[in-house]
Image (tube, rainbow, N blue to C red; front, side, top):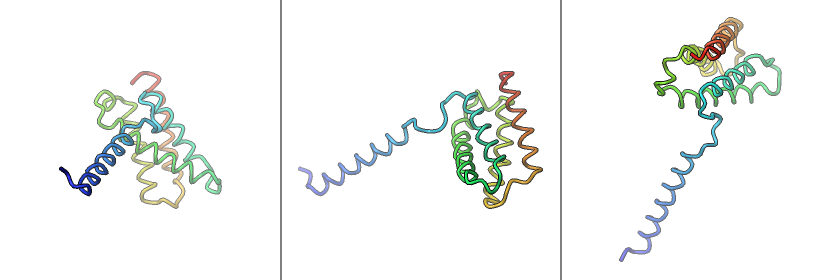
Length: 134
């Protein structure tokens, strides 16, 4: 016979493991699993975060959304070998690293014009590569 206290602790541990497993497997993220669609969605999110004026009330939520999408995009596609060799992915990775680096180093400063121009060029290259299928 298992003592009652030990039984409840094992049951609680089992319930916690099941809850963590279910939450980890839930598909409520921002990405769909379709690389092309996810990339275009991220491009739009990044452009919104970059182009909004600094005094806009939506600026902080747009930046938070872009950060979340960047993290999810990296987590999903970085180790996917079928995607990692595409020109669109390598260019997107360069753009994401630039914007994420700015947000991490200077969270309260606006994105400099030089970085905005570079990101816009890279995002255009990503869209062009996606239209070619690369």
